[in-house]
Length: 285
Image (cartoon, rainbow, N blue to C red):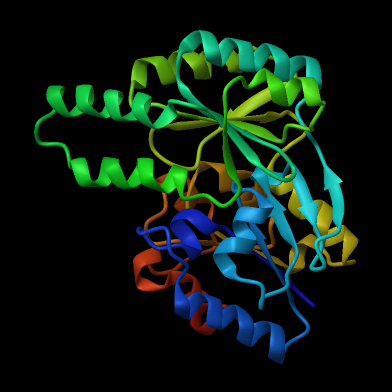
């Protein structure tokens, strides 16, 4: 038996943030014809994953970059939220920086009202300074954030803290690269959290106990599968930890160079249904 972990954005999802039909069918074929396990391993929330891939595919899900692991029935197996006191300080800091951010919780994603206008204003400044920049790509990035399943707008992010809800991660999205670098530097000096990224103009803050690789190791152990029998498919920096521990690692054709250097194999791009090509052609399954 093997455990196959597949990333979403830039991997199973096309540039339009839609799942590859061929990729989904390849997953169904593996589940019906073999005893292999398939999991989605993503920075997205679990309920967002379910909304994207549909209810007909019942598989375990590693979500929020490894902060939560659920089995194929939706049962929570493990979680590593940001410590509450640290979450309080983090949210206060992000509000001071006046950036768009999202709070990932077990059942919903919360974001302060006015975020879309904030991003639009930043985009206008960026395009004004760089007239040759592709404005449509920038607009699609904003739209993708607000099309997530389970996203809720709130007046005061501290409401989430007062409710005592576990916070799996915080996602920052800004077109101000200088501000993003400043925020990254701030959190690099913290002991209880670290940062990663899955897309341009974003930064994700998670517990130091959280990463995709650790979550994959946990899930493999849960199913009594050796790490040598794990396969991962991904494209970006938040996939590095699982590429470092998996038996076989497959980089998408559109991957960042660091992922390609760590990979065993390279498949086609996400727009060329690279997941399906890897599952059907490259891997001995």
